[in-house]
Length: 364
Image (tube, rainbow, N blue to C red):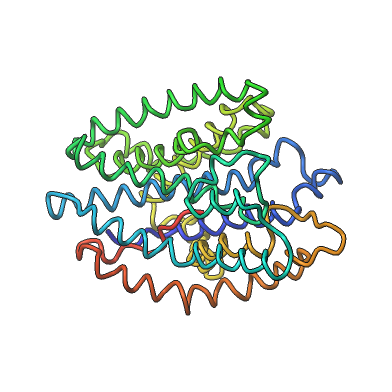
């Protein structure tokens, strides 16, 4: 599986959406009338994370399919070791630094928030224990929960019957989002939890990426012919931008339409590697930002937290301007001098038929 051009650009846009949200750029633009309420969700941090979920589900499932086609099976040991090398070193480095800041600089976390983050369970944290400096780890929680289960299901339950897996993915997404629509209307639950981040709800966006990978890599000629067409690109744009002309729809319908637009766009990109849009997404600085997007995502939590608000005299996080500067310096250094060491180690556990696959498979 060779590198898919355009995906780094999508990753970059996704993490940029998150960073701009946490800088407070969108909230300021909305309050001053520069950004309409209809346009804001399109470029929100939530949308950025959802796009990355789709990309992650698509790429990891494609890797599993290619490994199965080449070997007749999938090495779960190899998968989990590669994932550990990619995710854990930087993740726990950031948590350790957060703990040191809390101990010696400024109180930034609660004990429960630290425990939830350290055990990859921030997606379920009650609002009363939420810590803005670790709040971004909820997406890692969702991804790790999903990928503990998904490869094993393909191997032991579906036995690589991808058609059956596809049907069940779609059914599971429908059930999950239907339940989410119900739970979102229970005021007491929403007041206590970030319901939309619960793994069995937010995991739906990853599942849609997995379903797309099965279709693109499978024997679905008519569907793939459509996904390669300009009509599919137009539909992707209409779905992704629907709030501009339809207004804000109730959740999770609003997010579902936008994510479906992202799914179609991902499939279109795969089928149109020489297209102009792909060339734009491959623009050097943009593609580089996508390449180091995991580091950008993790470090922005430490330097920016999940919002620009600061208490009087607060020593950490620093003001947003200094935080952004630190992020732009530290994230590239982190990638080249820290993360790549572990990426190289993970290569020893990658099947040779998939060794040319992009190594940036980490979640936001």
